[in-house]
Image 1 (cartoon, rainbow, N blue to C red):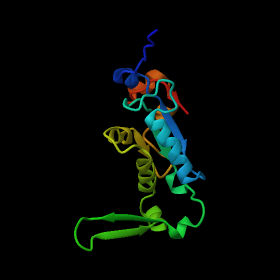
Image 2 (cartoon, rainbow, N blue to C red):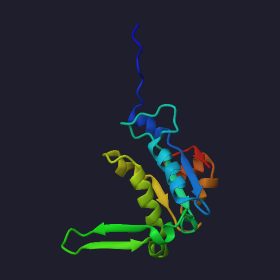
Image 3 (cartoon, rainbow, N blue to C red):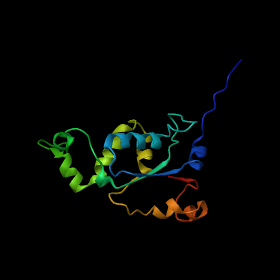
Length: 159
């Protein structure tokens, strides 16, 4: 007997995307980033397929209040290189959090996603804010019809 495997279509995934609103205050950076990566990839869904972009939208607020464990406040550095000689730059975690806490969350989630063509699309569905005020606050409490009018593409809004 032949069993047929059903694969989700890309247009079906577009129609079933949900919005998740996460508060990062007093949460550990790595654990929260793991939850966000799972939501962006769609691994929490029944019809997950690794080669189809079936993840949800994620809005993260209060990234300036995120915690880290251990002695990483002094020991963790962010490294980048310009490509030129002597172009290496290292920024301590504490200074990066003071400058731009959203970048810390973005890098953490980005590095947890697969390094393939879908990573850019998944990162576009992630919205990160340092404070509590967002442009998506109205969509969080709105009815599905009002959420669609507010510019969101998903009618099913989830906390």
